[in-house]
Amino acid sequence: MRFTALFRRLSIVACLFALSACSSPVEDSAESAQVAQELAIFNVWARPTLTLKQPGGVYLEIANNTDTDDTLVAVSSPRASRGEMHDNLHQDGVVRMVKLEQVVIGAGTSVHFKPGGMHIMLMGLDSQLVGGQDVPMTFTFEHAGDVDVVAVVSSDMMGMEGAHGH
Image 1 (cartoon, rainbow, N blue to C red):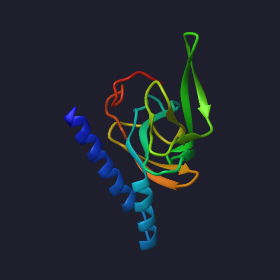
Image 2 (tube, rainbow, N blue to C red):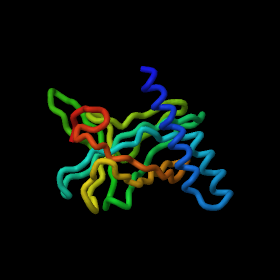
Image 3 (cartoon, rainbow, N blue to C red):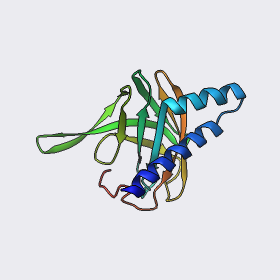
Image 4 (cartoon, one colour):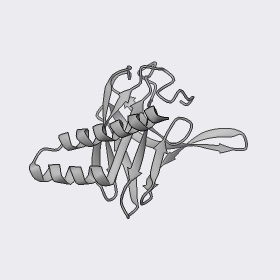
């Protein structure tokens, strides 16, 4: 339990450092730091893919540390022709995947994208996702705008959570 809490804190610090390092001019740097403090994206990871035709699954957590709801409206990566948000719906003993057009992150709350639930799909990958690779991504929010993050591909085929999914 203590290791998980420490890992989560270190992940947040690493995410904030990466976000602030991505900006160019000084004014952009201040704005990026503000966005990073208000809207934190962390624990971003992807599953390795077995073939080039297989879409990539990406999982993460978004914390909205503001007093205002924000909405994730798009995801993209230069490694994929398109990114989509999906959820798995369980109905009458059947699980089906549904594309989401947007995801609301309520003020003061967190949203988890995890195996078996909401997740990001990267379609039309330029190459297979291999353990240890970095996958640059852009998350577009209604209020916060574009936030750049990096997903690390797990070296474990089951992924960092060890859960099943697609």
